[in-house]
Image 1 (tube, rainbow, N blue to C red):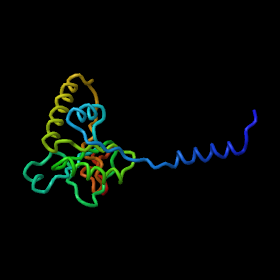
Image 2: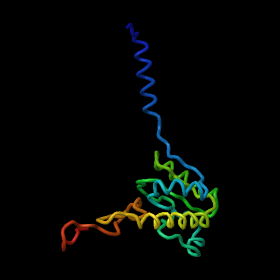
Image 3: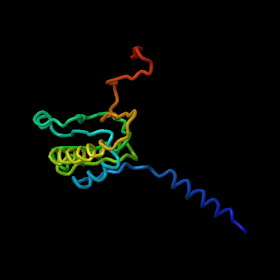
Image 4: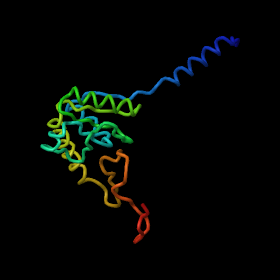
Length: 165
């Protein structure tokens, strides 16, 4: 087998270029059907409420993080963005996608009304599965675990011990 040095150099350069290619987050505008299918398989780490302050006060979204410029999150799974309209959901989603390459960002088509429909549907699915779970110890990871800052709760493995801040 006769391998030319030029062919080896070309293969190495091609491999380096492929590995060095930037990883982009995936951003998609999703309707209720798509969100139901995707989030049944893999729940999001957090829901970002990018609606106006007035909309957030009038109709708060349970367990959602209010979006603000400069917001810092560390997404451990996909992120859901709810806004007053589809254009703003995609705009905020694009900002988050740029900050978090490789993470899936779902912009909700239809805003808060559509998101509430998805939540109700997912609650029905989880409650129907809950009755068939095995007895024993279980642990539920709380929603919105991707926001940085002071923890809401610190767990300790020793009974009676107080965690250090």
